[in-house]
Image (tube, rainbow, N blue to C red; front, top):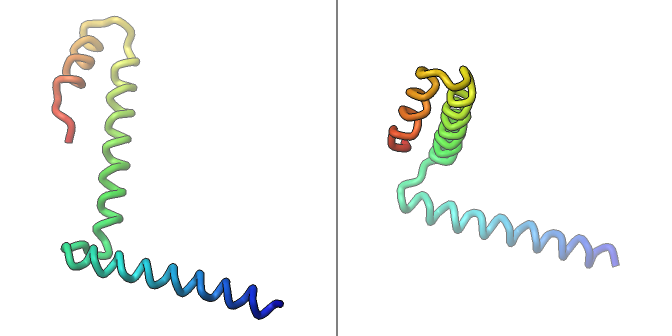
Length: 80
């Protein structure tokens, strides 16, 4: 019975490796590099931090002309 469990587990692992290899091969054929995923994640983190910074800039300072200018400037800029 143990051999059946190990066989099923082995088939699942080998199947997962095969599917991962296939998608990686397809992505590389389209020009992906090993670091492109990390670059996309880094860019996404940067955009999130930028939004948080803009939101904090709006909330700080109360209703002063400077905060109103910051609010207008924040939403006038096109997203990156």
